[in-house]
Amino acid sequence: MIETRGGAMPLQTQTPRAWANAVLADGAACIVDVETSGLDGSIIEIAVIDAATGEVLLNTLVDCSPVEIEPGAIEVHGLTAADLVGAPRWPEVFATLAAVTASRVVLAYNAKFDLGRVLHDCRREGIDPAHLADPDRWQCVMARRCEALGLGPDGRLRLGGGHRALADVHATRAVLRMLADGRPDTDGSAALAIRAREGS
Image (cartoon, rainbow, N blue to C red; front, side):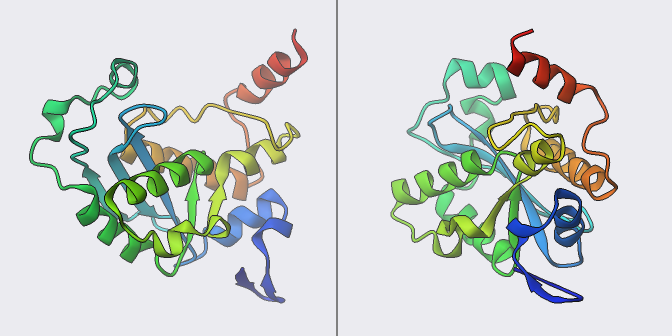
């Protein structure tokens, strides 16, 4: 819940525009994005920013060895094993992640994916994921954007952030700000998604 003038209101009950304004309030939320070794792989890059200000709270590569980066993943984000040499490992990174998200709603463009990868790496390293294991702490920006566009809960829209963690969290924040202003779509992607869904 986030405190509003009328008291505490569950985020899930708010309209997408009201929701976006609530999570953009000072100190209310942070935005997380991860890049991984593969769709079911380990985190190799993570960024977190303050939703209200855009301040960078965490931005680091992650040494996931001995897990190998899949060729298809390299094609997406361009990160290779050589890029991860000297990067911190997940236990160190998670300690910072837990600290910067402790008192905030956690936003991600595709929250199911990011939450799944965080929990995966915590299991792999034997780490208690603490508050980040609670799915109610996570909110999906893509789902609320699709709701605003009438695409339904299973709608999907490309973010267009460039598939690097820091660029993607800033792109997600831009989507949030558009939602807060009542502008969920500015690039025609909604029309493309609707046509694809209708098979035309």
